[in-house]
Image (cartoon, rainbow, N blue to C red; front, side, top):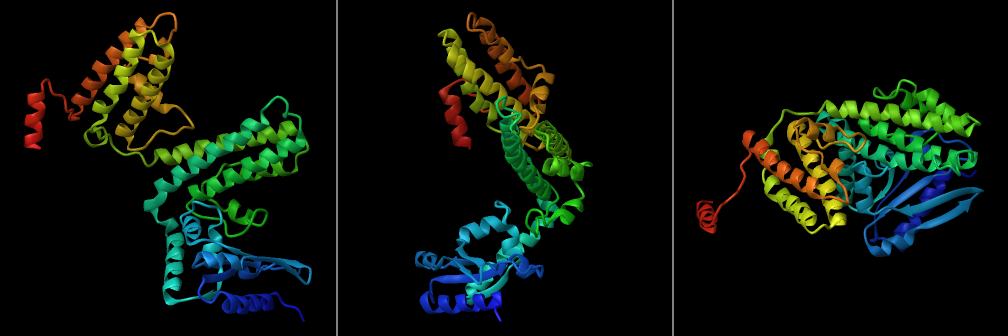
Length: 369
């Protein structure tokens, strides 16, 4: 009687004969590893090559009308999976080993599993929240695509983009909750429902996305899902805010950003509007980001613009509002004002600024340093 594990035995014999020193680890994962296999389930194999020659062991085949894929994962990719930089973390954490070349290979693989299990350590919460934030930004691309006028009524197109929105946001929620999905899409609904941090209407919105026949309804569900998830991520990120600390977080900042402020002034003097445009907006954004970091110990989110609100609340001039190709004098004056106010703002908060009136002063500073 045919049994898929006999295929595994045949593969290991093949590997030991043809590639005895070229493969470090071989394992299987998926439904058979989890005990949920059906009559049509394939056996999901992977192996980690020890040398470049080991990649030649890759093999795709069908036996007894069941497909198999003996595919390679480099050590580097396995490390990315263990670090949650790729979605297939469960491949590393839940696989069953079939073959290990040496004790050193076994120890290296077990360290990857230890890294996976460390995800739930509270000290990593901030890191995984920021990772979740980045993924939501990726989902915005799908929302943009489904909002194009020529695609708004194309149900097939909307479903394609909605799938991207939903899977990306669900992966974001896993990271936010410092966990990973142990089963594939469609089989992990129970785990998704058990997530502590999730939109209240998550199940309803994902169900709407999957079964609705209206392109408009699917698009609306995607936008609500994204909006609600963003709110949760931003709230969680705010919980990691720290007390203001300017001296260490802004050390050297003014000395560097002054060069950019001078570029804007030079552009204004030369009536070079394109340069003034790029540098003025860029420098305001950079100052706003660093002020936010100095006060909260967090980098601002691209999902909102809180850093600009903070920048303006300190009375710094809004350079972007003063851009006018016909007259750059107001922008020039505002940059000079920003230069003075920024330096004063930092000095009041005990940030050391290395400013020297003469070369002799700088040389004396270097001697003391």
